[in-house]
Length: 266
Image (cartoon, rainbow, N blue to C red; front, side, top):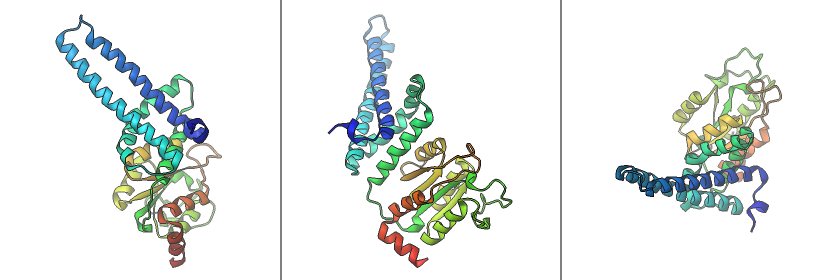
């Protein structure tokens, strides 16, 4: 089975750069080891370098195992519990290096983050999750609200008058029909406040690639399905989102049959 043939291009970008970052760390390890065994170094310096090398070996080994877990999970669409820790280490420890490598090779950071979101969504969908609607939080960005709207809804989203001029009305209808929780955030601080307040077991998040990437990492290990917003007028201004994609994400966490039951009950 070829990874190239079975992992879609968008996901392959992040996985490939993650592998490259581990290989780069391996080269760094070789350099540290060379310095450690150099006889011109003092014994104290050698001991420090060897300790650093040992720590780096551990990190590289776990990250390599995590990358293997990510690839297997994507290929087989099956959650493999033993890889959870290594996968978390691989992403959290090496993601900054991935961005640096991308910058060196002139790869747009937005494409890398979009690839990361796709990989994350696949990992989440590999899990067997069946949650109650009240355990799910829908986080939406304030830029979905029409810029001409006079009503402030970031503090209380029910201040929306549901005129239908922006996607907020459709999202509220989805919330009311399914029974999930919902919050509209102006940034990471308010988003974290909603997470602390509602204590969800799963999150459906709508945002740009940058905010989704940081949000997914900040809320780990809470599973997050990220949905990139559409920006026809540029970033942070009258953005939009495909409601069926949001509904599909909510449906995944609740379960198809349970989702239909929840909608009927509301």
